[in-house]
Image (tube, rainbow, N blue to C red; front, side):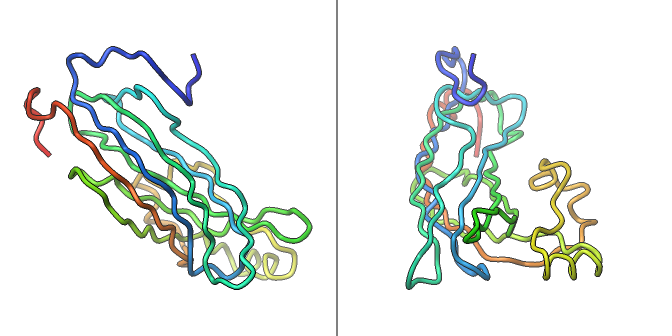
Amino acid sequence: MNTKCLHNVNSSKMAEVHIVGQIVGASGFPDHSLFCKWGINTGGAWKALAGLREGQTQVDTPQQHDAAYWAHPIDIHYATKGLQGWPKIHFQVWHQDSFGRNELYGYGFCHVPTTPGMHEIECPTWRPSGSFKEQVSQYFLGGGPQLKNPDLIYSGADRYRLHTIAMGSVHVRLGVILRNFDKYGIEC
């Protein structure tokens, strides 16, 4: 079974959440030629019924704009027995230079809204700042510090000990559809 795209999980006795939308783009980053890797993380009580749980946008190289536009679709359907572990979308924004080298520009995450309807979300991003030596090396050679464990993007415990630099924002438009929450006694 493909772990990224799941189908035919029995959800007859579970509440359901359908998330449909797009990663619109990004703004506020120091350079153009950006792309985004994304994923959706949930708790153990959640089952993906259909859709992709992770992906990557194309590289957008705008000629006259300060923002990158991706319009990358998100469409995933979950079943759950409780609210614990509500879906979170995490992002990694990358810059691709003229030689095709990729440099991490920022990490970020946001919770999927718990109310049904259309939602415009602006997700701030950050990157590890590194030591003074690493910052000088990054200025002259490129690259820079990256997280060894990407789970730190959306798990709170160790993230707050990191020294970070604020970067730009990722813009997301999501439609949330809830089904059978009241039938199974789950309140949002």
